[in-house]
Length: 90
Image (cartoon, rainbow, N blue to C red; front, side, top):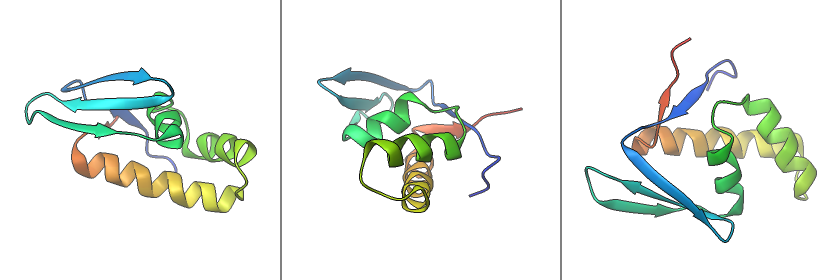
């Protein structure tokens, strides 16, 4: 994943954060995905740079910035694959 890629939430996905966990509802499919605390952080910061998200996660949790960056990139790919996020047009 190129660090210059920026994403946006898919408007076809509804979501709410409840007690630190985001619940995504894929409107057309009727499917639901529950995100953990870190996934919720990434979801709520979609549109920010991947490096900034990784730096914040690394400072909050006991992981290196490199590990956090790999995890953020993998999670964004998962969200992109599920259709929850889309590439933002620049």
